[in-house]
Length: 394
Image (cartoon, rainbow, N blue to C red; front, top):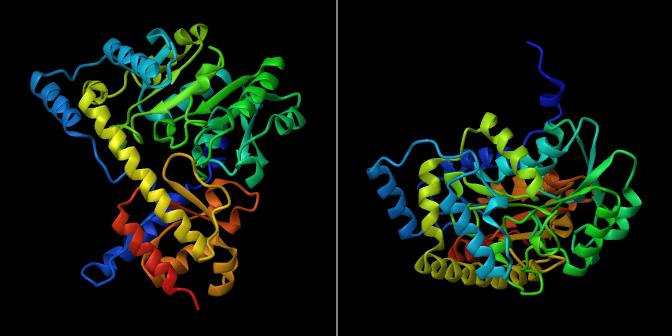
């Protein structure tokens, strides 16, 4: 059977490959005094809060499970619009919001609507692997630009300008970022957008961790710049609805009909049950619970990052959002006698019963020096992880 070139260009998702190995080892360790601790997957240990679960049950009981509009329930689009106003002080009309089957569908729709075969999209290295593969699936090419800790592992306007070529279509950014948890400085983001706009390009920005910002300086939506920004967001992270597969896209007015047409054919509509449940995310009690959880994620960061640094697993830039730590494991690799973070991750898994994610997924610029830890797990799990990492020290 002949496989399409498009499919062959998609690399394995190494995060999930490592997760499979960790799960197998966890089964072997089941019942032991050292069960596997998982700090490899970016999934909150919190699930949907009570009002969201109750809304789902009510919708199921009432039979509210039929197709919705391809762009989502009008009431949900309005609730999201209201959230932008109350949280960020931004007027984002509901008419520009398209509810999607997760942020993944939002990225796919944006790429299919805007990228032609051969177009190049500039992205930071390191960055979330799926984002570049959405570009590739639309027959574009992701151009990874090496970044540094001084740049917060984000693109700069100067680098965008220097890398811009005849086939460049625009940039795909993430703020806060996976794997680094760092955001783009607002002034730098404005300069990047100016460079892109002057060249007739597009600025796409993944903001799925925006609700989990810990620093007011960075915790602002790029949508404040102008209505030509395209923002991808999700109910998975801040709203704790990972498996519900629900997200949204904010697009310029002229793009709404295009995205709707694509969504009609590719997805029909997002999950109706998830949409009815998500309406309850914006109830005062739910929002209060989300803010409590945000404070808990910050507390976990404030414990875990200094503890990693003390072990020599240096985190070059303090994450200002999300729940990741991008740690330099060079010293640990030497101690373990391994070449890079890929081998180190499997050694940590075997010797400490601790699942972590090697840098391989996230780019090619020195990613072999880094391990990504997820701090989405409980404080107790993080404390156990630090103790086990400490025990690896000579």
